[in-house]
Image (cartoon, rainbow, N blue to C red; front, top):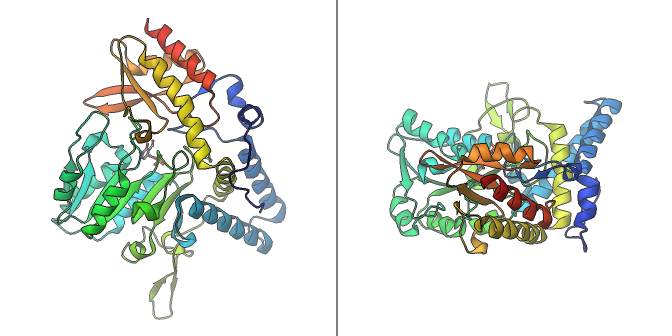
Length: 398
Ligand SMILES: Cc1ncc(COP(=O)(O)O)c(C=O)c1O
């Protein structure tokens, strides 16, 4: 496996677009908060992986060693990305799967409590699993009220709600407004109260720095196919070693446990304990290549580039009459997600009209039955694309 050169000196974004993002030749794609396009080099890595398996035999001893070393590399890169141990990285399909492992794996008792933020304002992936627990197991849902339209809440209220609860669960970055949540403060409150903390990092991993040690969380889940630019169908579930001791594995099988002659089941150590059966190996090859790509550019540089593009977009769209902007004014408190609501037009219709102009944004819920338009630029988008997108929006709304 090639060595990764982290944070290489110069990035030529024009070259990067030409070499790896053919979509940029005909489309302005700013829906990276949903699924990002994979760089061509990732597609090549996946094809190479499939060819190696086809030529060497998919389960020959040497191919097996190759796959094991690939998974090892992948875990090493993820551990580097989020600052955890290699063995705390479990490969899953998606964020949803990771969050459900927490929901289904802790030993809930009637009367236990979970603190969630904003109820229906949270992404359903980080809300419905807890609603199910409340309905099936009598777990109490304690909802933090939102103190503004961007989705923030009061830490003082959290201090009260957390007493006697078992878990706090929170998105790191909100999918609809792009607001960055105060996860480190929440982690501190969770720790002081002996409560577990679960973070949905679907909108943060790959676009802002994520550090599980600084956050102090027990669980975290994120996909490979949003800001990490990996293929669909592979994601990451981080489970701290300590938390893994009390988390019931979601499944069991040959790769996760052994059975003695006396019929005693013994789970293997982490991460195998939480990973029964074979994984999505081609997806792992793709995610490994994409992580190498992302880490070569470097998270700091990605953040800077993304915010340059987002700022142009935000400033230009804010000038359009009858458009309401969302997201904190303070740039340090938001991701590159730019969210707005046309006051006299329908958000979903506008998204469809933009597609006719080869521009891909998304419509997303903002609570109260309303929808906003969300642009989610990533490092391969250009400042020029931001200005063009804003001018399309302006023309369509006139
Ligand atoms: C905050 C958040 N959580 C969870 C998800 C669901 O992610 P996945 O498709 O990886 O389950 C999304 C997807 O958009 C999201 O934005």
